[in-house]
Each structure stands twice: as structure tokens, then as C-alpha cells.
Amino acid sequence: MKAYINSYESMSCAGDTQALMNAIYSKKSAISIDTTYMNETPVGLGKMEYDDFFKILEDVVKTVLDNSNLENFNNTLLIVGSSVGGMAESEKHYFKDKNYKNIDFSKHAINVIGDYLDEKFSFFDTRSISTACTSSANALLLAKRLINVEAYDNVLVVGADSLCYTTVCGFHALSVLSSKECTPFSKDRDGMNVAEAVAALLIQNVKTDESIELLGVGASSDAYHMTNPDPEAKGAISSMQKALDDAGIKPSDIDYINAHGTGTMANDKVEALAIETLFDNVYMSSTKAIIGHTLGAAGAIEAIISCESIKRGLIIPQTSMIDVENKNINIPQELIKKEINYVISNSFAFGGNNTSIVFGVLK
Amino acid sequence: MRVAVNIISASKIYAPVKIQDLEDKRIVPKMMIRRRLTRNAKIMLYLADKCGFKGGKIVYASAFGELQSSVGITDSILNKTQISPTIFQNSVYNSAPSYFSLLNSDKDEIITVSAGMKSSKDALKIAALQALVSGERVLCVATECLDIKNIDEVNSCTSYLESGAGVVLEIAQDESDAQEIESLNDNGVIESLADLISVVNMNENGEKKIFIEL
Image (tube, rainbow over all chains, first blue to last red):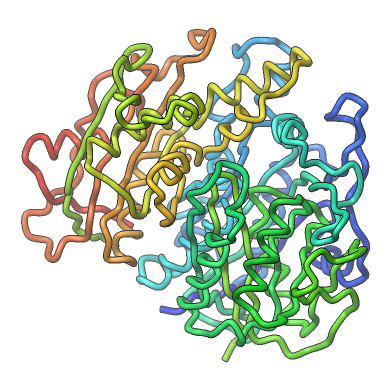
């Protein structure tokens, strides 16, 4: 069976999906400069306004359900992708008490997100995936395969990560945080913006007039280094090639590449090389200049952005581009109206974990 | 949807506090890399070695992930000391299988599951899916390392602070003689490993083929 994306919604520092796409096409970054986490050291973060992260989670999933052909999620498998799960809650208790006594470990781990949603919506079953920044991309990969083999009719993929001290301070320790809005693929880029988001996509084995096909998935491991990508870009090339093969299309069929494009020196250099090697002048950009790197949620929210790009027939321009480092890649800085049939979206993670997803217009 | 899988090999290990001989000097001869490994990674590498797994798709599970690294990071933040870049890179849930990939030049897919007390159950389901779509053998492995300072403040779920289990599986040609997974967890072992430990025990009892619901 084929897999179709039939309903989706997201919430990020740019707002809901409608607001996010408005920000993307008007090139208005939603990154804020923040000193909360880094002891008065300013860093650019994709920070949302909320009292309760779980309420956002519930609202986003409710919107997806309301916009779908389902009455409930009783016959739907939930697959959550998250890199930190309930870490923010554990930190709160640990920093206050300086011991573990008030930490509820069932609310610490990754599955807290799936457990919460299951309690609210009663899914058929749940899975929780955590492969760092490819978590929700891998959730999409599994969703497609489960639909393909006819194990499930409906799969809801949720990518969710909230900001916490561990990730903000941890990336600072790696010296990869930017103190301003990130500038992916620019020659003078100085790092990434850690961010938070919730994104949910309903994948089904039936299509509607509004469907986007989840056409191809591919994954690989660099087997090179725990944090630095393979400088020859073999892992990134491999995941993209596998996704194209799975989709049954050629590199020249792709109209737009939604790049991982974190804004770090290492990622952008290697990803640009991979794209230069595999594709011939295809339009590409990174939306992390708008909402930052939403870590485990990135694959899901960038899948939504890819779907919107196809539906609107608008290539996404690069925000905050100053002077492109690799002159052999094609990064548009202005909006381009074009019939878009195929988009590929990349997610790369610690451990050399690479995942690429191909989205296709309904044929 | 239910599939029958052959269990090619299986292994388990656990200890009340720290597993003593993970044969890491033999498995990882290079000291510089060995020193960077997390305890989860050492146990995972040991289990992969015992299962005779050299490379291919991996589905790894852990309910609590790299708890020791997480504690190291939060302690550094609390005490306003420098966070070790190595500890941060080791803190992600896919650290252990990524070290396997690095050490064995394994460029295949890695999926990491963290589903609380049903982590190994869900890992088996995903491993069966990966075996079904690829037609290849898949390593399904789960580890838990809870040996952190003052763990007694919160630990009520296991008598063994370090534990792990792994199986190599492939899709069976037919369903004949396939068995449902029995509940055969070892007493005191953390519930998140229960299904994998049960499959290892079934295999030790002579069962070679099991059913897994996708």
C-alpha cells in the first residue's frame, strides 16, 4: 500500500503552520536572543511561549484529528520522535532539590510524550523513537514502511522536543551555538540555534484531494565520528540516494531540497558537498534560519514545510543568507513560483545517523 | 499483522551493580576509543559480539538511555562547571549502537527505541519490520545502566543496575513451529528488558522461531 500524508499541524517559535509558512515566505526569522539558559551569555534560541508544553502537544494532535477523516485515534498507531522527552521536567526538580527524590522517572524518559497522548486520545498502540536529531524523521520512515507492508491503516507521527538546559548548555560546550540568528550555508556562519517545536502528521493508506505522498525513505550511518559528519559526505549521499531509490525517482526529478542546514561549520559544508555530488543545481534551502534546530522534532516539522511547499508551488527562499560558501549549490534568496512535484528533506544526527525523506505531489 | 521470525543467536547479561568482564579490551583494542565508550555501549558491544553480529541493521532499546551522561551534564550545570563535550555527545539515546557502527564500519540503519517498560517489546516489533522490509538479519538489542550516584533515592524497579539482552533475527520462510513470546523474564531484571530476556530464555530452551506482532 502507498502512504499518504493527509493531515498535519505544528507549533514552533514562529507559531502554527500557517504562521510558520508566512514567516518562511516573508523571510522573517522567529529566533530570539536569550540569556536564560547560559548564565547571561546571549544565544539565539527558537523559544515558544507557553505555560504547559503538554497542552501544546495535545492541541496540535487534536487539530490533526479534527482535520482528518477519523473520528478518533483508536485504530491509529502513534509513533513519537523526541531527543529529550521529559528532560526539562527532571531538570526542574533536580536543580531545585539537588537530589532525585521528586523526579518521577516515568515522566523523565522519551516515552512521556507518547504516554501523555495515549492517555488523551487512546491510540491503538504507541512507539517512541529517539535517535537524537533524526528522531521524528525515523518515525516517518517507520510509518511509511508499516503502511507499505499493510500492518496499519493509520499512523500518527509526532515530533516533539522542548528546550532544556541539557541541550542548550550541551551544544554550547561543543562550541556550535550562535549568539544571533543562524545563517545556514553562509560563508561566515557561526553556529546553530537550539529550538523547540511540536509537529504531527497523519499518514494513511488512503488518499484525499489534499494528500501528499510519502514517497521514499532512506537511512544510513556515517560510521565516522560521534558528532562530526564524514567529510566525504558518504553517509548523507547514501541516505538521499536510498530515499530516491525507494521513491523510484532520479535526482533530476527533485524540485526542491529542504536541507538539514543547521548553520554549523561541519554540517553545512558536508551537506552542501553531498547535494553538489548527487544533484545538478536543484533549489535548496534550510528553514532552520526561521525556527532554529528543533532537534527530535525537526524531521516532522520540516516534513510539514516540504508538504506546504509542494501544495503552494513555491520554492522556499533562504533567510539570513549573506554570502554562500559553496558556489556549486543553488540557494534561492527570493521566492520562486514553480510547479513542485518532488521534495527531499534531510535530517542528520549525532552518531552519524542520517535520514532522508521524499515527498511527492499526488499523481 | 503478525510475522514469524527465526532467532539466529541470543545473549543476555546482568549484574547487581556493575558487570565485571565485558571483554572490552578484546572487543575494542584501541584504548582511545575504548575510554570514550559509555557503559551502555560496552554492554551493547559485548552482546553483539556474543550474538556473532558483525554489521547490518540495528534496533536498539533503552528506557533510560545514557543516564550517567545525563547526570554528568546536569551536575555540571548545577555546579557551574564546564560540560565535557564527550559526555554531551555520549548523552543521546543512540550512542551505544553508534559506537558499534563506528567500530565496525557499519553504515546501515540504526533505530533507537525508548518506550519505558515496553522498550524491548517495541524494539522487537521494529526489528521484525526492518527484517521484513529488507529481507536481512537484524540485531535487536536493549541495555539499561542505572549505576549512578544515589540511585537508591529513586530505584524501585530492578535488582540489577546493569543489564542487557540481544538477539539476531530474520524473517522465517514459514510459520511452522513458531511460538508466541512467553513471559520468561528473569527475577529482578528491569521490566524494559522483559520481552528480549524472555526471547533469549526461550532460545536457550530450544525455541528457534517466534511470532512478533508488528
